[in-house]
Length: 302
Image (cartoon, rainbow, N blue to C red; front, side, top):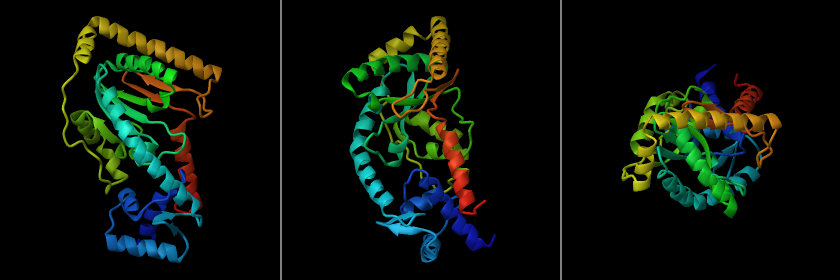
């Protein structure tokens, strides 16, 4: 493939991925997600060439694969809604960090990409102390049950847990790389920095992406967090950890077998292991990767 065609393909691959979510991009965002770095002049020339051939389109400073202004308008509305939600997300994330054995909190999902639709949840990525993930998750989800009373459960979507024993994400593909680099750190600077370092493989997909990092933070634990960790820091805690994993896995397997649906109409499913817990409604990752593959085929990029 000629060099200029390969460079155009890099841009189209970025737009193709975000087109899955009907999310057009600014020039700066395109530069962040390219699979190789371009100079600003080179990127400008390539974008103009693609616009001239009507391979891509520009509306309100957003580039898209479609001759349609509606996704740009939808994005602007979603960005404004996200800006209003983010302060609340940081406040809740800081609160969740005070739970026992929690070592780091980051905002994930669509909000981490500065977008929120009218039904948006606040999703969190949580790292716990090694071998205490299931105690931490159980306590946090017992609290979440209380939020259903006030109708605020969508602010506490704790969808992905790992512990310090398993910081490396094994599914190394464009989807997981995207989710890693766009995480918005809330609390736990040292642990999150270590997580990003261990998962530096994500830079193979997005070598120019500038990750967000916490600059500094206070690390004082509240007394009740210290006390609860002391209570479970023994053989009894080890027993509870194993029991909570076993019980939770059984309950979720039962929900899946019965075909219970979440609010979005997807079968409720939780992928569990000793060092991780991951919600997988509708096998979202697999669907995104399949759609992305098809878009690359349609664009004759593979």
